[in-house]
Image (cartoon, rainbow, N blue to C red; front, side, top):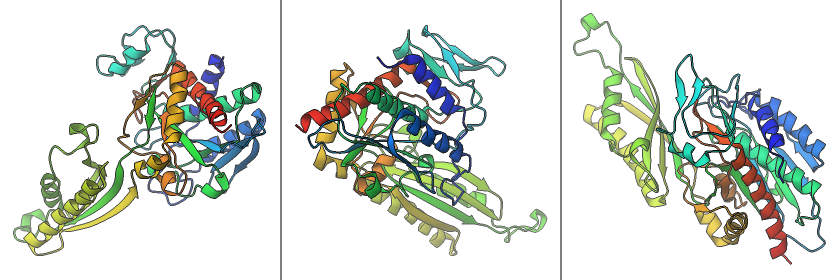
Length: 413
């Protein structure tokens, strides 16, 4: 049996350490405070008995659980990230433990009337009678992806303490800066040395994913000209008006709040404007590679059309690819998905095989030669004050890791 209280204590110890990443930083890790948890994790891996524990100059952590069988078994890996999203503060995380959840509203913060309600977040009703860990309404929680780290370490410790469970060599890896799209950038696949791996970075129990968005980012600079408004006729160029024209030229219904499933989108996630200059930041997403390419062409065409319309460079645009759909790299080795699916079924967990409306380290790692599907870690409502994770979900994820290790060696006989 996985020790429930140990899972709770381990997870809370992680989330209380602020590891928010910073997209405007050029260092790796992007924030110095990520080292606080990275060093703690490296020490903990040594303490529980893992071998070859290393932490490099960029805070990438790797370790080994040696094989306990004599026959050859493919080396597999499990990977999670320890940074948290810059979308919402991770400073002074104060987790709340809700035991035997009754299916009603959870008051996160009475003073500010912040309520986690199943009327809005319907998935809460899946966890009646379970133990939930929530925020206090003032920060995110950090289950994305400290739940994954907790599960991987707990699974390795369980396998060490239960040598009757036979397995091959297992490698684990923890990365910085996944939330800003750089988690796999400096990951040494050759050093990791696994035939394949799994990221523990999904949400609801049963999620198993080997498809994700193709992703690009777009930075748009809109040029204006400031003069005194009293003398502005024929002289002032208000960049904010042209920025609005650009925004309105994109498809109105192709945004995150209007799409689902395999539908892609354009997402304006940041805007900063004055008369002289306005900056827009977009992310572009689509599962279909051809449609993804068409989206990039469209956003550039709109910029060019506006420039032609006004006879000058009003819009400057820079589009950069971020990651691609891992499906192309995983489908040739679908047995790695099949093993994870079988592991869940043997644990009476219904597999939910679906496409990720986002990305993980696994998408980039798959293109670096390490096929890497994604498995649930159990959390919900990531990147905000309503984030929570059921402890029972973390226990199930820990069991899935152990079962995958066991099945991999059995199939290698």
